[in-house]
Length: 183
Picture (cartoon, helix red, strand yellow):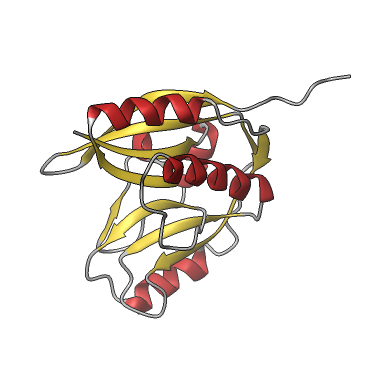
C-alpha cells in the first residue's frame, strides 16, 4: 500500500523567508524545511495498481506554469482552539484550475471526491494547547508576511510514510507544467 498526496514544492528562497517567521509561538511544532509544500490533494492509501494508474494519469495533465506568492497567516480550525498554523496564498486562478484537474483525474480513477473546499495554504506548524491569545499575538506580529513571487512549473506525486516522530515524504513522480512560448 502507498499513502499518497499531490503537492507543489516551494523554492528554497521562499522556505528561507518562511523560516524567518517560524519561531516564537509556544506549543508550536514547526514543519521541517524539507516537508514544506502546498498540498493540492491528499489521496491516502492505495494499492500498487491504483498507484501506477495515478502516476500515469497525473503525468497527462495539461496546465500552464504560473507565478504565485504566499501572503497572510492564519490557523485551522477557525473560531475554535487552533491546531494548525498556515501561510496563505495570494489568489491565483491557475492554482485552483490545476487542483481541479488533479481532482478530476483522481475521481475518474475511482477515488472519492474531496469533500472539503480547496483552500490553498502551506502548513507551518502543528499547535498543541497553544492559547488563542498567544496565536493572535503571533498573527498580529506577522500579519504583513508576503513571500517573494515564484514560478510553479511542476507539481509532484508524493508518498508519505508515518513514523513515530514524523512523516517521511518521497517524490514518486514529477509532472511538468507547460511553459509559455516566447515569441
